[in-house]
Amino acid sequence: MKDELIFCPLGGSGEIGMNMNLYAYGKPDSQKWIIVDVGVTFADDSLPGIDLIYADPGFIVDKKDNLLGIVLTHAHEDHIGAITYVWKKLKCKIYATPFTAALVTEKFKEKKIDIIPYLKIVKLNGTIDLNPFKIEFVTLTHSILEPNGLKIDTPAGTIFHTGDWKVDPNPLVGKNINQEKLKKIGDSGVLAMICDSTNVFSIGRAGSEADVRKNMLNVMSRQKKKILVTSFASNVARMETVFFCAEKIGRHISLVGRSMQRIYKAARQCGYLQNVIEPLDPRDTKNLARDKIVYLCTGSQGEPMGALNRISNFTHPDVFIEKDDTVIFSSKIIPGNVRKHYNVHNKLLKDGINVITEETEFVHVSGHPNREDLKDMYNWIKPNCLIPVHGEHRHMKEQINFAREMKIPSPVQVENGDIVKIYPGNKPYVYDKAPNGRLCVDGEISIEEDSIFIKERKNLANNGFIDLTLIISNKGVLSSKPLLNIKGLPIFEKDEFFDGLEEEVLKLTKTFSLKNSKQYENLIEGLKKTCRKYAKEKTGKKPITNINVIRI
Image (cartoon, rainbow, N blue to C red; front, side, top):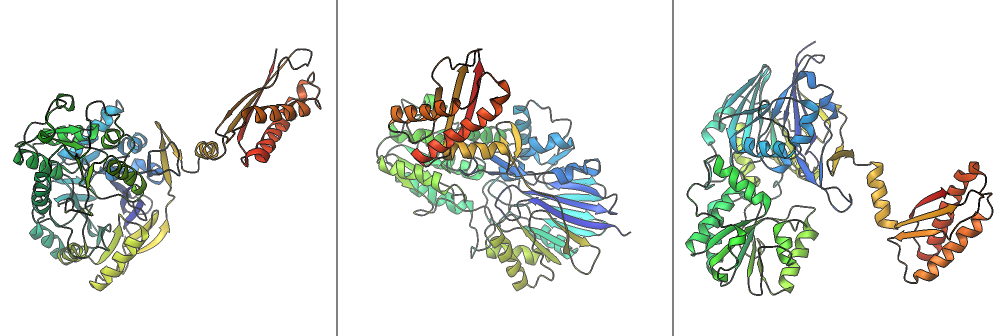
């Protein structure tokens, strides 16, 4: 049996977010594995009570004795957000650069787990040896500190895993992309490049943070009243831009929102943001003139618990917004968040607030590669095979088409669970399928997406609830009227509905001998059907029904 080099995405291929990728090398019965990234995606209204979703790690959990570690490319939630949930099932080493490691450490602290013995901090552009994998971290540019591509050397050859990236000629925080290093990687020969697909439909280049700063200063200097800027907390370059602009226009700055505070502290801890003005605590800004303060807030996606949403609803304890103040959305809308975002946007406009977005001013650039950026990376790396990830199927299919235009010899289309044999063979191909799925974080518990708990919650949301209690004496006589508790049914004439349902319940109960406890199950089933049938006739709904029979 020959050694094999395998790639398998468990998440992030067919969707934006939830990135989780596996690599393996060795003979089929003794392969060694690594995981690259363990991210989340965010749930929408179709999953009530669920905030986060991550890739089911069951396939790699079964192989944990041969797992060498988790390697993290950068600190965005769609790449590290599931780390605490997945790691508990694996108990393996984690490798990350300093800024990513700082945020990972905080995540484990919240779960009261000491991760320090397992967390290995890798210096920028450093190398780790996980035999048979030798992995070199290659610092790229993106919308967060310390984004890394991974040069993964194996006995079969080299893989280049881009992570999230773009070509930013002036990223402001961190160094420029090292073109010469990438060219050397390409010149040495690359079997396959696993590449970000997010912006493949966008022509030209993604743009530079330096250009955003220039225009942001113009926009902010025109505002006469209070300014609130909302952005992704993880975009430290954008954070520094808001600090820079606030200082230039003679204003104080205050950070609002827990994740904004957390990212600021982590960046400072790692040596970034050393030359910016000191932010004020929001509690200390209440007496400042409206033209002397800039707030940098979480909540750019309209998240219900984000700072901006609370401010717009006048429920934030420290920040108050008034007519003619300005809110700048320095971000794009993530698919799935459109309705939440525009709910906040429209409420602000209704209340007389000026709203500026990327639709009206140049206040945001993406952190992902447009087509010209992709063309550069193809020319630098010159891979034999291109495997698109980090995108919906339409993005990944388009990158396959683009790779063919760019004369990449063997592009391979994948989806979650596909097992790609990169070596041996004339060219890589999908040869098997790994079990895969999605787990939902329900409070602190991970459950399957088709779980009975979610189905019940949807049923409650759609149809309402009836709780009926019968109290029966030892002699088999109803000791009082049936007790009814009804939630979520569209009932306007409550007395009429209750009286009618009570009559139906009593009519059915008379057909049973209440002295005979063996008939209880049949009675309960009959009462459930009666309640649901009556509710359907009167409201069109078939509510979840709970029956309690109490003997006293």
